[in-house]
Length: 115
Length: 116
Image 1: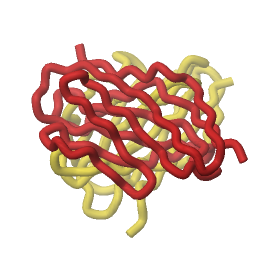
Image 2: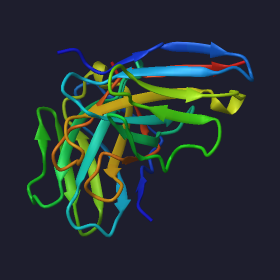
Image 3: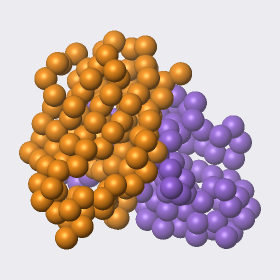
């Protein structure tokens, strides 16, 4: 079975500091995408970053980067220079079947950025 | 280019009533997905539709739930005879391409259903 696990229900970070959110997954697929979504209090799901499994280089989007370890099936999100607006639920997601938009979501990590 | 539009944003129903949630995908998108988010949980896939076709409904409860995406108009998620356990946020997402290898998934702001 394909699963996505986020083991940190809540995390807190001081403004301007760096925080890493963990995600592990299980799949037998060899080619797939991985995603991090952000859900702020407004509740809209916003794509933060995505990683292509066949690329060895870790994806980066401004202050957001991933540490993708394919062999370990680990996909962590690093947020640098944390800002108050980063306060949100963060969900790791993985496509069921590897190449679809039928996403399997983790249970989420609630990140609180403290001033 | 407007994003994915969902309405209503909030819907209150009494047990036994029907709930209809609407979703208009982004312009040019022909693939629609419905997800449900129960309190304190992640999103769970319900159904994937293209125009006039249900492609994958493996996440839909067997009874009371149905979805459609007609040739004209928005996609509709219909819940008949609602029960308290149906209270949740229902998210619609759309994409241009079916696969994650091609298309990014764009989410609406969700419809929050409360069953009294």
